[in-house]
Length: 171
Image 1 (cartoon, rainbow, N blue to C red):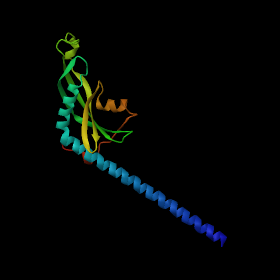
Image 2 (spheres, one colour):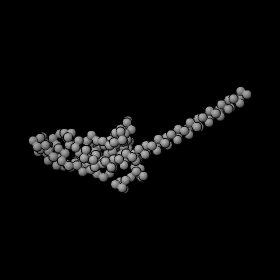
Image 3 (cartoon, rainbow, N blue to C red):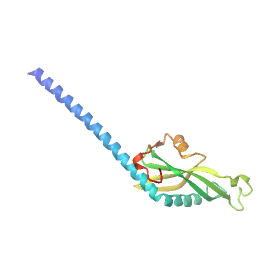
Image 4 (spheres, rainbow, N blue to C red):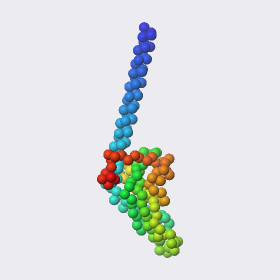
């Protein structure tokens, strides 16, 4: 009788472990499905609000006073959007390449600098907060969106392009 008890206990424990493992795998697949759904929604929302977000970016960036001695004259955003996830917070980021034209502040240090008229490459940074896309007008200069993600790889995780989430704008 003592041996039968241990055999039955072993079988029950094995079944419980298998059930736990199967449950954990299902939960992982469920979470991955939820994250993919969240990403699809985030991308769709970004594309619907993109024009407003770019205008907001330009307003905030031009009010920042950076770079010193220059004003933001014009900004042309690229069509492509790179999405990433902040490794610490888990929040989405959208990175858009852009070309910026500056003008010197009249009477400022840069007024006589011939390089002021050179176009500058940068990446505009947008972030998702409480299901809304926002921006602080922060630009990462001299890096494309892909380069920005690689440069900040300890902070950002590049997100895959999901075929089902592509809008007509992306195709």
